[in-house]
Length: 266
Image (cartoon, rainbow, N blue to C red):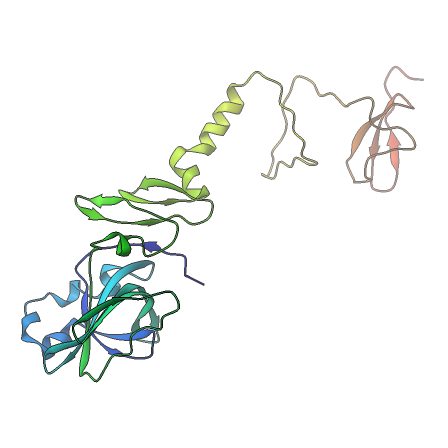
């Protein structure tokens, strides 16, 4: 099952790595990459770690290049994410998209296993921005959007979400975020306060849970056609009802129904 996380497609992450398993690459940092190839000597390592650029809550597009004798002997493009295990960070090759070997570039088909890299000394991994629709729509239920000019950023719409913009990011908006954006709690409160129409609720129970809460009204109506001697409400302490058979109010005191006597009665 695919993890529920957001896409973030950008350049800027680059690290050396070692193949850990068929689907995992252990990332060993940019500094070790500088030790292996002086072309990266001016890269600011503290800003290029995948954990720094993407965190653990985003998917991204990656390129893995297997290096031998300073030459790329094989490469793979795909969609992945990182996870931490103890003090190590791994790239998870979740959705491989294409691979290149011996000068040939091929797209993966459904059911294909990820590339087994040939003999190499190390791999280098970097992120990139999608360049075609095949890469842009690598995940199902995606919608093309952009956060900055000329930079496509597909958004995955999870079940029961809407497409929206929040915190300057085009993203999937869930119910809680929608309430926050639209200030629905205040809207509902204001609508109830302003309405002069009758409200009919089908709920079986309405609780005021806040301490010292109370109902305030000029009067209260106990429906006179609901209960009688043979049909009383649930026997809960404090329950008050109008008994149509007796024509009187009754209150349950925890042991029995007590009839309330009016002042004008003998």
